[in-house]
Length: 301
Image (tube, rainbow, N blue to C red; front, side, top):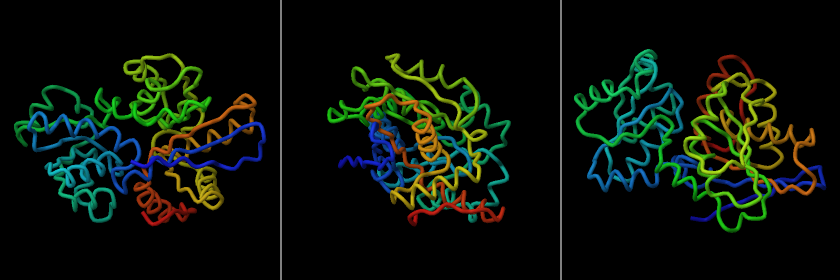
């Protein structure tokens, strides 16, 4: 696997900023999803499982990644989807449509039912309905996913003083923390509101060289503003690097703001991890078009 790290030009001679292009790993199983699935796919084969079952919402990067990974590795795939109304909207939802084309079978459940996704009784009912399967949690975070994310950093990354990562379920940043080098500070940017994520990370991380900055979620998961869209478009125009509006876009906005406010000490060398998620841009642009708002400029996804 070729690792691509691009330098980002700054109007600041005291800092260096680079971005790790994990989004280029695979067109559909990109970024942290590739990392999270790597060892889980090996384990599923070891257990002689032929079906992968997982959970996600309407525009879930994880759902599409699992569908693609199943297609490429000869697994049947089942997606338990939050929102029973989506059963009638597959054709207008690019994420679900593509996942279905890749062979994923859907089970649409109400939001109330979806909250039971980790309950034993709920999982037993799924086994009774679909038979034996290898379970992948929502977002893909488990111990094997952490193991995969520990491979994001390499021995060539020792010179970076700060590693920045967006946060969903906390798996990616946990792997980065575990594989970080002495003297490095790991900075996380949650896309969800709430302080619960620190506890999730603490369950997986084995070092304490990390902190969470919760000022750049823009209202919560899936929430965006005109300022964020404008930043993403300006970043693409300047650097020719597409950013998704859910994770990496918010992180890069945060990094830019922190740099302007002198958060990073002089001489810092910052590495931002691009965790992919670009497939979600099409769905977001559809919503923005309906609202007659500025859309996201990007490569054709």
